[in-house]
Image (tube, rainbow, N blue to C red; front, side, top):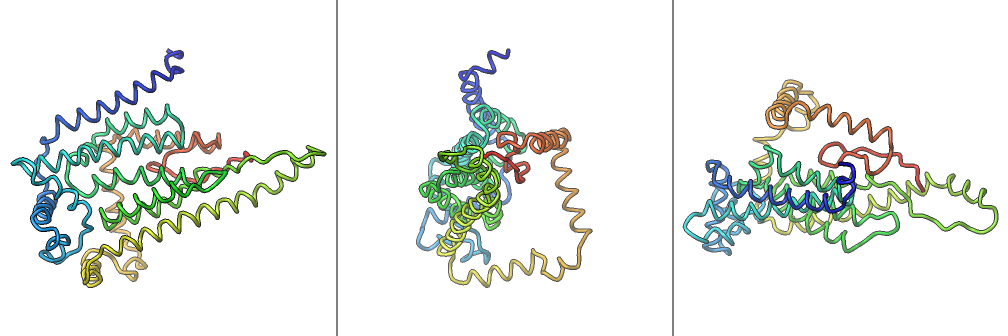
Length: 338
């Protein structure tokens, strides 16, 4: 058994088995869920855009008086006219978008932990009963869940210990813009992206200078905390610039009158600063209870001791490979390697 787990071929087959399971499970349940209310509205948006992109590209504003980021409907408009069943057409689109998201999770976990952990993550994602609902629905979450792993992966690749890789920073920018154009609350994922530098606080290796190696090593250790903070500040600055640029570019796609629509929406559905400062515990308790209820029904209560186990293991071992992923529990590591 141990020899099998050490085999690279086993993990390769496990990953592709997870991909096959993911694809087949979504394919055979593609039309199992009845059409969702929001899904029906979004299909109508896509149909109108398919008829006349110039007139209806911001259809939610023009006909319904509220703003919705348009990228989901633009993509849906490309396929909604295929065949005689628009629901099937857009759900097939979601199937392949979600399949791409599975590869995004694999790349991110592979970069963070390694190939073995990435293969296991892909299988867990394929088996999650909560995820399959979003994979088969033409809703914004389907697209956000698929784009976010690629953004996190690109951010992690961009801020390597030895250098900043601007190609991956640009790639992260593209996915950040896409997330903002899929859903208004996508900004939350961009803010979470600022935690990515804390996943890798290692410093680039430095060459040993001639002379007294013991003094040189001691000097390097003394400077390590300052160098680590400088490196962290640089990585944070790069990601802040990427996120700020993504927000600015996304704003270019907003139609005139967006500010008024946003104000009306906020007054109806969001709390004001005064209400938040009033500490509405009844609202917070209700929301927390809903989250726990979701986990108990869809993920099982065993997920909580599992997360606690990984958290304790990460704190005790203090290594990059043992840190929980962004989607579960991101926290700072105190890795001491230089």
